[in-house]
Structure formats: structure tokens, C-alpha cells
Image (tube, rainbow, N blue to C red; front, side, top):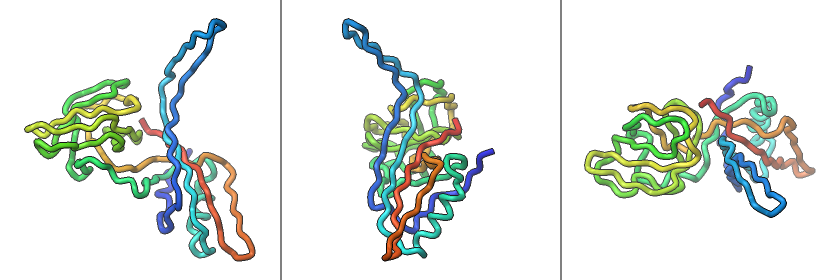
Length: 205
């Protein structure tokens, strides 16, 4: 059984992060060139982290952690660096769902925002609902009304029902695993270690 092994070490920050949004679509083109498209549902985020050269002492923590991940088997938390949400809402605001929405929804009304505030969320912000580890992206900015209520539009669709008063989180915190079962380490005569790792979102719906 896979284990949660904690959080990716953050003592050294990556020099570059590449974020990929992975959708599952089926596309076919007929003989007369008519295109048929089907959205199979499901979505995951993928990250490539390119680290600067590190000494053995700096690298050892990352090396041990990645080996303990056992390739794609175990999972862990990854907080996206230098990517705070742009909207006014913070997870500490204790925002909750103001309605029950079913799996497949791409919009939800939420409560407990600061009342009558512009841009409580902004397009491009990350959000999570209820106990799901799935991270969604806000697709349009929203203002709160005089009761502290705002409607959030997001992608991808939620995968499980969100009930009234379920918590809403705005931390860019992802549950991930390594993409590959092989983890390579390379260093030269200057004894500096380079590292590039790929992470992919794994879900508890």
C-alpha cells in the first residue's frame, strides 16, 4: 500500500518550474475531415522542477527523499513556489460552500468571504473543495456581495459532490508522486549535483 511520505524538501528552491495541465480528450478525424471530439473527463497537473547546482550536503536531503518515494509508488505534498494566489481570499478566511453541487460541476457559490470585496478570487488562482486533494483553477475573477458570498467558476469539473459548509482552500498545495520509477543522480569533478524531477498530481477524490 502506498504511503504519504510528507512534503518535498524546500531548503533549496528550484531555479525553474514548468507547469503542465493534462486533459484527457479523444479526437478522431473522419475521411471527409470532419472532426469528432470527446472529453473523457479527468485532469491532472504535472510539474518539472529544475534545481540549481548543489553541494553534496545540500543535495543529500533531496536524494534520500526521492529514493524513499520508491519511484511512482509513494506520494507526498508539493507547494508551488512563488505562486501565491492573486485574489483577496486566504485559506485562513474559513470560506465554505454555500450550496451543494454534484460531480461534474464547474461553478459553486461560496460564503464567508470579506463582504463587498472586489476580486476575492482572480482568474488563475488555485482552489480545493471539501476533503478532496484535487486542485482546480479559477477561470474568472469574482467579487463578493454584501453577505460575503461569491460564485466561483473553475476547471476542471469537480469529481465528487461538495456539500454546504464544506471547506474551500486557496493554498497551492498539491498531492503528487514522481513521474518515473528511475531516479538518476549525476555529478562531475567539481562535486556539484544537478537535479531535475517530474511530479504528477495523484488524487484522493
